[in-house]
Every structure is written in structure tokens, then in C-alpha cells.
Length: 109
Image (cartoon, rainbow, N blue to C red; front, side, top):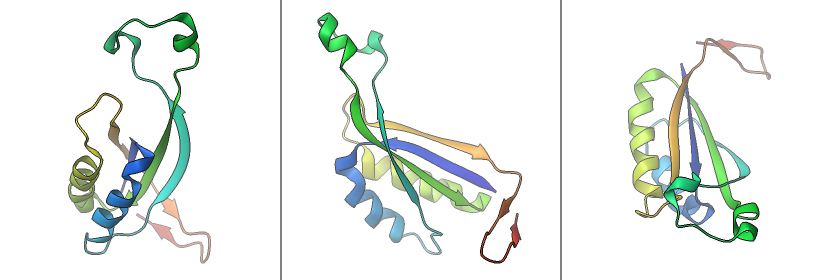
């Protein structure tokens, strides 16, 4: 079992939702509001004020899936959220040892 996490631009959420819903047996997604900034070396030098207030609104997307669903979901995120600009975000995959559904306490491997 894996968790796919991504940091994406909020204005890409509609495209991302449509892309994820198009994947057969897509299990669902959790979205968190987030803020962040790009590595300073990637940007042109700015004023001190800019450096201290450069957080931009982002979303964190989390999806728990069986291993075979990782690649189609990862590709859907990359395609739907790519603008070619600095700050498009990141996608990463985390191993999950076990997951328990609260409703019926079922262990899902």
C-alpha cells in the first residue's frame, strides 16, 4: 500500500479532480490547504520584504492506494498540474505498512 502526496497550485484543482475521477476504481482523495515557497536559489534576488512574505497558497493532495494504482495516479497529477512554471509543485510516494478503516475497523493492506 502507498500514499501519494502532492503539492499543487489551487487553480489546478478542477483539472486534477477530473483527471483523478477518470481513473477506474479511483479510491478518493484528501485535500489540505498549505503554504510554501520555492528554494531561494531558483529565484531572482528580491527585496528583504519579498523574502519574508513570499509564501504562496498551495494544496496538498493525499491518496492512499494499492501499489498498482500509483503510476496512473502519479501521471494524472503530473499532467493535470503542470504549467511549466516554477512553483508547479511536487509529487512523492510513501510506503504505508497498514491502514485501518474507522467505520468497521477493517485492516486494509
